[in-house]
Amino acid sequence: MEKEKLGIYVHIPFCKSKCGYCDFCSHVPAKGEIDRYLNALMLHIQDFSGAAANYIVDTVYIGGGTPTLLDKKQMKLLTECIRTSFKLEKDAEFTVEANPGTVDKGYLRALLGMGINRISFGLQSASDRELRALGRIHTRDEFAESFKAARAAGFCNINVDLMYGIPYQSAESFAETLAFVKALDPEHVSVYGLKIEEGTRFYRERESLPLPDEETEYKMYRKAHSFLEAAGYKHYEISNFARPGFASRHNLRYWLDEKYLGFGVAAHSYFKNQRYAYVSDMEAYMLEMEHPQNMSAILSECSDIDVFTKETEYVMLRMRLFDGVLLHEYRNTFGKDFAKKYGEKLRRYVDGGFVKLDGVRCAFTVKGMYVSNYILSDILDF
Image 1 (cartoon, rainbow, N blue to C red):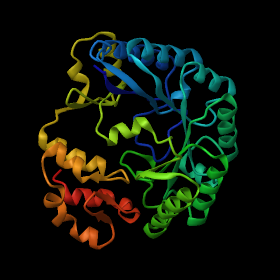
Image 2: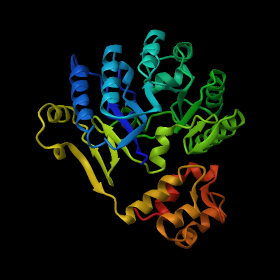
Image 3: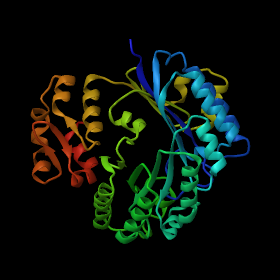
C-alpha cells in the first residue's frame, strides 16, 4: 500500500533586522539564541517521527524570518534531523528561504550538498529607493549578485518574491522591477500586495506613508499578470507564477488541502484532521521542548475539521488557484451541486466579470483575483 504524502514546514524566526512592513514572527536574535532555538526545534521534529512513520514526505520548506542566518553547521544539523526523523521521497522538493547578503557561493553549494534543491529569494523591488523604504538590508545589485551566486552554485529551481503597493512605487518602477526579474530568468515568481498590519512600523506611520493609490495597485497586479504570462510564466495562483513544471509543490499542498506538519514558534499544521498552531512566545516554546510538560500549553489554536468546515475550506483554497473549483470533483467529494449552492451568491460577480462559472469549473478572472478576499468572504459562511 502506497504511503500517504506529507509536507514539512520549519520556522526560523530570526532576521538581521526587522522590515517596516513585516508582521511575521521574527526578530534579531540575541547571543546564543539561535543555538538554543535550534536544539529545541530538533527535539520537536524528532518527537513527531513516530506520528509520521506511515507517511512519506514529498515537500520540505524552511521559512522565516531568514533561515540563511543559520551558519553551515547549524543548517546541516537541521537538515540531517529532518532526514533522519522522516522518510523523504527521493525527489522531494526541499526549499529554503534566503535574503541577499546572507549567502555566498560556498554557502549555497553547501545547501545543495545537504539536499536542498530550491531557494526562495526575497527581492521585493528592484528600486533601491523602494528597498530602503521597506527597510530591506540589500540593494538591487546585491540581490543580482546573490541570485547569480545561486545559479553558479548549481540551483536550478529559484523563486523570487516581489511586492506591489509599496512606498514610492509607481506603475513605471514596478514595470522596471518585472523587467529586471525577467532578465534573471528564475523558475518561479511570487507577487504580493503590501498589507499594512497592526504592530508594524508601517502601521504606526500609515498616515504619512507615500503609498500608490488603489487604481495604481490594480494596474500593477494586471501588469504582473500580462508581463509574466507573456514571458512564459503560468499565473497558477493568486500571487504565484511559474515556468512549466516549477509550480511550488509545497505551497500547492496548502491550496489543495493536503497534510503538513509545522515545527517552530508560530508554525501551523494540518494533520490527522486537525488544524493547529504554536504560540509566538519563544521562551515558552523552547522551555516546553527542553522540559516537556504540556504541549497543549504552547498551542495558540487547535480545531477538529468537521464536514462544514472542510467544505468551506475546500472552496476557499481551491478558488485561490486559477483552475478554481472543478465542479465534478466538488460533487464527488461533498455530494452536492456547486452551482445550486453558490450560483445565486456568485451571480453578480459572474455578471461583473470577476468570476467564471460554467459546466466545468468556477474560477476567478484576473480582475476577480485582485479582490478575491472580499468575494470569498461574501459567498462563504466564515
